[in-house]
Amino acid sequence: MHDRTKTLFIETVGCQMNVLDSELVVGSLRRQGYELVHQPTAADVILFNTCSVRAHAEEKIYSALGRLRRHKRENPDIVLGVLGCMAQKDQEEVRRRAPHVDMVVGTGQLARVPELVEEVKRTREPQYALSLGRADGGKHEVAASFESFDPPRDASMRPTPFQAYVRIQIGCDKFCTYCVVPATRGPEQSRHPDHIVAECRQLAGEGCKEVTLIGQTVNSYKFDHGDGRRSRLSDLISRIHDIAGIERIKFVTNFPKDMTDDLLDAVRELPKAVKYLHVPVQSGCDDVLKRMKRLYTVDGYWEMLHRSREKVPGVAISSDFIVGFCGESDKSFEKTVDLVREARFKNSFIFKYSPRPGTKADDLYPDDIPEELKKRRNNDLLAVQNVNSLEDHKTRIGDTVEVLVEGPSKVGERQSAGVRQLTGRTMTDHIVVFDGHDRLVGQTLKVHIREASPFTLYGVAETGEVGGGGLIPRSAVADPSSQRRSLPLV
Ligand code: SAM
Ligand code: SF4
Image: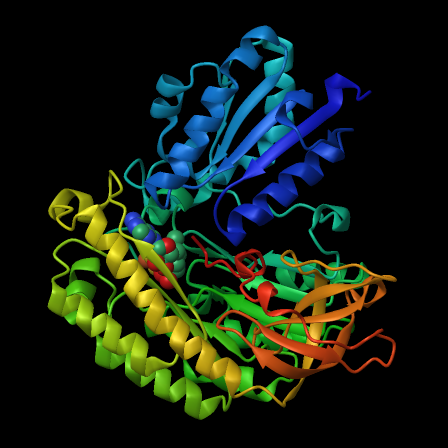
């Protein structure tokens, strides 16, 4: 039996930023003696770390909160908390739709979670901790109200101890018209490079081999030291590159207009820099990009693509798209299809436009594309992308690639004599599935590629210790679960 007074359940929705926030919240509560459990009804503290990027993510949380209403009535001593983007954006709405919630804590206040949990337990009064809204004060005042929450790391809280997200930037100042992030995460602020390097050093000391630097527009990272010196993302990557034990450095998500040559040079020159860029374009039509206020044109994006491929030979590039944005005509959509056909992205994340109250697009433009058409466009674009992904994957058959083994493959698992299907990623972020022993997890090894699907490469590890060495059955091809690990910053 668990000690019901010190058990914690947390559900996380959304992007890497939220995954990292949850890791840190759980770590801070564990230091207070909390033990993580996997059923909400077995927990004394139940937390939802939320996402507001699309309506669907919010509705999922309201449904989960609704399902807990009776449980909370029957167990009034438990603490029920809503954290993150929905908390920051919609505190009133959360209170109205889920009055049984005890705690509403915005993205910039997560460091206070342990204190607020205790406060709820002590007073049985609801607790609210939110940062200022973007219009509630001057830029510095609003920025100061969003704390960068980066306490000491706890390796046992990560899905894999040899991989870690490292926040280098919070917030966003781009204000794309469809997007809630500038409201939910506040003004763009870059962390001090010394703090980031110290965190990476600590992670390396704990056995971490791969760090993924995260920021909403990570390549806009800049830190002014106040003495005329400025650190850019390329400088930061060079410093992290010197840390013994770190084998791979990734960064997501990039903003097309901020893809500078110094960054591309660093990615080419530094062997530990992963040769992969996630650079969302969103649409292939200039009119749509203008209404989205993306600050670049399709030609500008092509220039960035060509330059990236020229400067970093063999680089893999992926993108995000929003289909069915306000006023997206058939012709506009066709331009996006053409872009996907020609740009040869490694993969694309495609989203149906979801109007978000409080954004410019929601104020200015009617959501005039019917849901059915959004769905059709989503499927059509995905089909074009999948053809390209498969072609790209087929060119890799016969290659021997270096794979950092992440764990068991979630689909088509097979276990015999300790052998099972493992999954990992190459230096170009391609997913590779192969047969191997559990003890290979966390190692970097060479895998010979023998087969390909649109989502996955299949191969044989060059370890000499894998029984059979057979190929993975075709039925195991699509492994969307492993795709989830590289979800964009949503
Ligand atoms: N900062 C990154 C960038 O600008 O490329 C991406 C962050 S955004 C939160 C992640 C992705 O969600 C976006 O690239 C976009 O494709 C999608 N997205 C954002 N707002 C959306 C909305 N209102 N409806 C549908 N998709 C949306
Ligand atoms: Fe910022 Fe990205 Fe949202 Fe644009 S889509 S406002 S760049 S987070």
